[in-house]
Amino acid sequence: MRRCFRKFLHLSSADRWLTIRSLLALVTARAALGTVRLAHRPMPLDATRKVVDLSQRLLPAPALSAPAERIAWAVKAVSENTPGLGNCLVKAVALESLLKMAHHACALRIGVAKKPSGEFLAHAWIEKDGGVLLGEFEPGSLQPLTARDRTA
Image 1 (cartoon, rainbow, N blue to C red):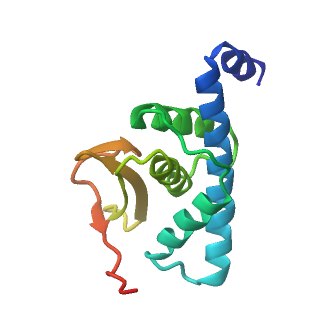
Image 2 (image 1 turned 30 degrees about the vertical axis):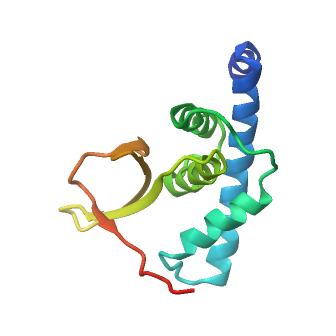
């Protein structure tokens, strides 16, 4: 814990602010996912949209102005050093919320796979400009899911 705090103190003020915003986004995403799961059993795929929208409304303004890669770095660093925030869906929702606030185009993806043992795997990640920004995985190992188009 001390080592993390020392690292935090040695960051630039912009990176300290970004890590604080990332912590808030992760906690908000975790809480929002819990709220949506309570309302929808089982959680439908398009419910992640509701979680991202709720996360954005709960996060403090002003909008971010950091590069997408730096925002992803902060979310990853905070989630790796904070118990309970390492879930891939929590990280993906938090990062998507922060990227939207910073006006970066990105896509939250969810994929599934079945191991030879029959075990079911699911994973969430963020794509930007055709590459994976957060949530690395072996290419071709997951079948991406898509939410049904919603008409408003």
